[in-house]
Length: 256
Image 1: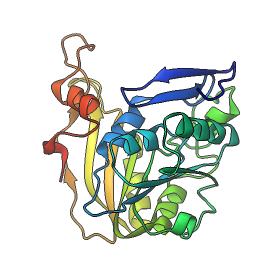
Image 2 (image 1 turned 180 degrees about the vertical axis):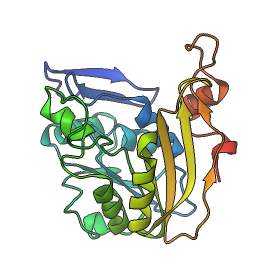
Image 3 (image 1 turned 90 degrees about the vertical axis):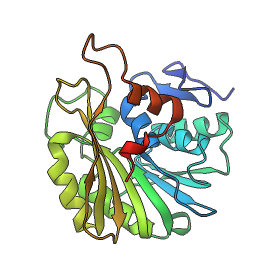
């Protein structure tokens, strides 16, 4: 086992991945698992992917464990999480498959790790820099708020890294769908598939997942809504939600 420090913990994510996490920092969430599952491996060999804002590396680790690409460049700006990500990659046996990159999305260029990625994915900060109550943890503020880059910066970086016709997968918040759509098109991506996650059928959506194609033509498919829990008690997962967690993939009805 790699080194674990007193301010860290170790969690088993699934049968494939054990994750080191900072006790007061980024932790594994539903956002990460759904983003990993939303990714679809394109046809071909030597598939290359890049993650922007990788944190401790969980989404790249999940995608790598399912063979969704042959090489991943995982970009993180915060040195503490970058160090944890390096240890997570080594501990889970993905050295040579996942390349950790310490960089700011605002400054990376298309030559990163050779460029020409088949797809890019991200769980970017979703709060504006001055919204809500600031966390006592500066690291958490950077992870959640647009302090070191907003949605325009993440979409722009994805466009620089992604090949023409490649995909950008992103998980975001429903209240900022308009900002996401504008940023995607401004960066040369055309939204192709969009899915809203609801905690229960009677609740409001809490997440939005979007797949966009670089240089794609107009035409967006809005999938059926995804409900996490059945209405009865808010604890029993729906069959579709169970399927996603068991297979790290979405049912066919959510695929374009």
